[in-house]
Image (tube, rainbow, N blue to C red):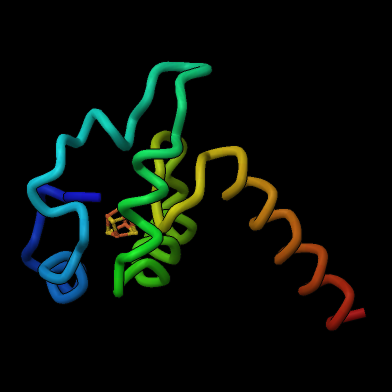
Length: 89
Ligand code: SF4
């Protein structure tokens, strides 16, 4: 996922993004449209985890980040929150 602002640490991983030069629209499909192509690009991306963490930390609500859709990221956030509650209980 290309991020316009590249003046902080994000620039490091963005430089290695597999989606550099790929049509950004691919990563923001219309509702109900396939996410398969975008996920294929992400599958081979060496900075996938950095991208995913960036999206999770920044609450990115739209698009494919780190190979996950917004729904998949919501599920992951819930699972992490539950795991954190379990370990702190
Ligand atoms: S994981 Fe996907 S969206 Fe993120 S930088 Fe890599 S190719 Fe781009």
